[in-house]
Amino acid sequence: MNDSNADTPSHSRADIAIIGAGAAGLFAAIWAAREEPTLQVVAIDGARTLGAKILVAGGGRCNVTHHAVDERDYSGGSPQLIKRILRRFPVESTIDFFAECGVELKREETGKLFPTTDKARSVLDALVSAAYSAGVKILHPQRVESVVQVDGGFQIQFGAEKMLARTVILCMGGMSLPKSGSDGHGFTIARSLGHSITPLVVPALVPLTLQSDHWLTALSGLALPAELTAIRADGTPARDVAGKPIAPVCGAVLCAHFGLSGPAVLDVSRHWLHLLDIDKNARLKINWMPGIRSESLEQELVQTKGQSLLALLRGRLPERFLRAACLQAAVDPTSGVQQMTRERRSSLVRSLTACEVIPSGTRGFTAAETTAGGVPLAELNIDRLESLKCPRLFLCGEMLDVDGRIGGFSFQWAWASGFVAGTAAAHAAISDNPIKS
Image (cartoon, rainbow, N blue to C red; front, side, top):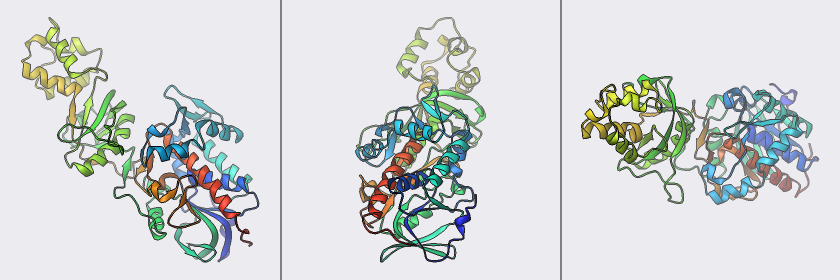
């Protein structure tokens, strides 16, 4: 989508320049322009396809948000700081905004909210239309190379053009899906303006890889519910920023030729990667029978008489999986349960309820839905999302050290943080006389 305004002359001016017109950027632009219609608000984006990440989200349907969202659905920064942003633009406000734009949302059994059209294009078109209606000027595709603080604001370089902006909102995404434009360049610009980036920046909501000869890769295409926990080599679980053990992640796991995918794997991936930074032998513990403890299953096997393993467990696990797990434990799945030795029985129980897996890696940022890490929240005035390092610079979206679990939570963070940064930037821009073109 090429905007006719892309022929902007050198040294053009704006009151607010939003760098990055993805979900957070478009939302920030809309609310900045709505907050003070007299301001000249310009959004600049360098991706080949505007809103590419919106278009591919949710399998092309765009999981706009979740019916219930709170700070516990996020990792990265302080939960209390995340909470302060989320409550400024809650789920109800998201629903109302999109309804106003003609996009009705429907709630599915998982709690996820999708457009009733089941088309992500409906969401992107609504955002772009709302931006234009508010008077936002969109320059696309225009890759911003640099942002430099100067007298009167910021000088923004894109291509052969320069723009002077009184206020800047930086929302260029993290490093996930780099073809969408979030290739990490935003972090470079943030550093140039005085910010730090968390020491660890890793893919989040990303599939995990296993060694090619791992027994689970032979089950490619098989999906089943499971309970996953990221653990150290000594068996202790990963911990959150407050030092509390992270609860197991429950959900579907998809066995693939490369390793493991599915919602539960995507959710646990960032915890495993962060633990891996501390313990190079970090692994996953998988309970393929969620809700069943190892001790309970072992007791059931001990008390079972006259049944084979397949007969006993067929209704609770796919036969294909059962046969593979029995092979791992060197157990004949057709033999009677009581014929197993204690050692073989314990080995099978571990395979089914406490299966330890050491991933070989991830599918990388190209397959990740979001980024874990970024600009620390402590470097911002959290009530305005204004930089404490560089006045009149605001940041929002995936650039910040906040990542949500799967289910629309990352989008809700984009809407909430975009709203806060956009309205605050408008207030900052009108504190002086607006720049006149």
